[in-house]
Amino acid sequence: MATKPRIIFHIDMDSFYASVEIQRNPSLKGKPVIVGADPESGTGRGVVSTCSYEARRYGVRSGMPISKAYRLCRNGVYLPVNMPLYEKVSDKIEQILKRYADKVERVGIDEAFMDVTEKVKDYGDAKELALKVKDAIYIQEGLTCSIGIAPNKSVAKIASDFRKPDGLTIVEPSQVREFLNPLPVTKIVGVGKKTYDVLKRFGLETIGQVARYSKEDLAQIFGKFGIYLWEVANGIEYSEVQEPGEPKSFSLEHTFEKDTDDRNLIIETLQSQAENLYRQLANMQYQYRTVTLKIRFEDFETFTRSRSLPNHTYDKEAIMATAKTLLKEFESDPRKIRLVGLKVSDLRKTRHGAETIEKWL
Ligand code: TTP
Ligand code: MG
Image (cartoon, rainbow, N blue to C red; front, side, top):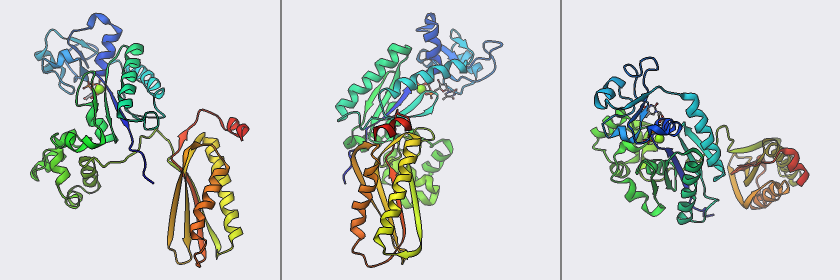
């Protein structure tokens, strides 16, 4: 079944710590603000955590010793890091984001992914939604952010960094390759100085060069990371937006004591698995959308078959009904069955407790 291409946002706050400081003390607005000063002396030791865009014009950058920043920008305002404050603001932003997407994955204090595939009908719609998110953050917290919109996480992440501050960069599926090709390979998450030095030795400095390089050779050089690089470079990276600790699926398997062709026994086993899975869903407060049946025959040949329902659902009976439909394909197979398994996946957190769900059924 063809699935709808995903629409992923990556949100990254602009000069985050510095912007929070300016928001709290508006007299700093328009000034070069450098966060990371030694709390005792105000300047001197320590490194720059971040700085306002005004300070960046002087060449000040994250990670630079404060002493160097001070030489570059003597009229800057140097402030100590106030982590509890930034964490509080970060939590509030997460709450705002959750209003606009089913899934929000925070990946750092000032960035997050959102999967809005189910919320919008196309990229035009996604743009409107992104503007709403930007407005909400600005109105509630007085902060600007940059958003990248793309069919996968890695491209969305690169896109949010493409135009900053207060940027919005949209890369539709058909534009992914042309967007990525000219960019330096260091734009890919995980490509630091060491990886870059190796890639350069192979003549790979742009993402396009990596995309056209052999996947096998990259795997030889970098192992699994090489495959990841190649996939990202080709715009075919499919990792999901994942809430922390969020399970991807619930599944159960049962190996029969003796291989069997007893249809009643098979159905009963699946029925008990379906009920058990439903209980797990209800307890953990998840809806599901996809049901997968696994069958292993006596000769160990194993099949999995999945079917997605039109919508996410709490429906207890649909687990078994779907399993039965999927089982039909194997009913004419003369081999005995060794194992059956059921899985529910494509999960979505619900707002209702298990008791509420029970009452509905
Ligand atoms: P970034 O998003 O990398 O930087 P930023 O938000 O300050 O600026 P930009 O507009 O370019 O996104 O990092 C987020 C926060 O993490 C940043 O505000 C401070 C902190 N940080 C450090 O403490 N040390 C560092 O070296 C970097 C890069 C960030
Ligand atoms: Mg940022």
